[in-house]
Length: 229
Image 1 (cartoon, rainbow, N blue to C red):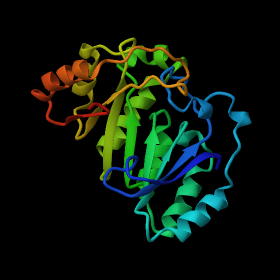
Image 2: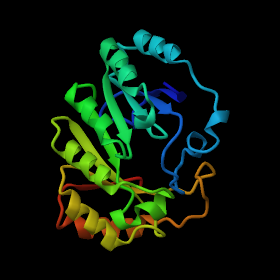
Image 3: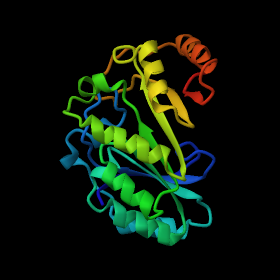
Image 4: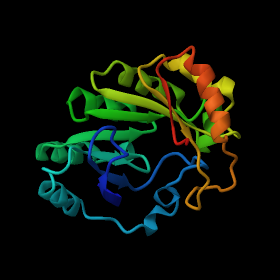
């Protein structure tokens, strides 16, 4: 598997778990606010970490770690993702997968074979804005299939949206919530960083996000928020 980054210890990427984080190389979307642009653009220039080096570390630290978060880029475009996860599970670690939901068959295979313990799917915006945000032709039916697979699974899951003014109105957020009707949905504050694919996008202020959140929380008890003070 193409591993372009490896965070050996994190308390943030896997809720309530101590986890290592693996960053896969490449993505099939081009979201301008992506904070891991080096994993999306010019990926042939990235120095890859040997898979066995990562697995050796996990074996050595398995008593200190609860699990592994596999993120990207987009992990499900890796042709050997499933085989790699099997190796991680053989070590005895939990696995969390971050995905954009574009490859439901991969998600189904992982779920059917009990290979993941937590899944987080990014919801970019309302479906009508997906191609504007991702700069790609997007099969919306595949996204819908992934959402249904995740909601009907027996594992922990979350859906999440990074909120940016150019692409997301409060009305859009409510449309998403109504469509998902799920257990856990997170609003995430956008941060303008040098590693974004496009800089100078406009973020909602903490106060604006709090106002949106507080209004929606009155109607939808499963909505949560991340990244504000």
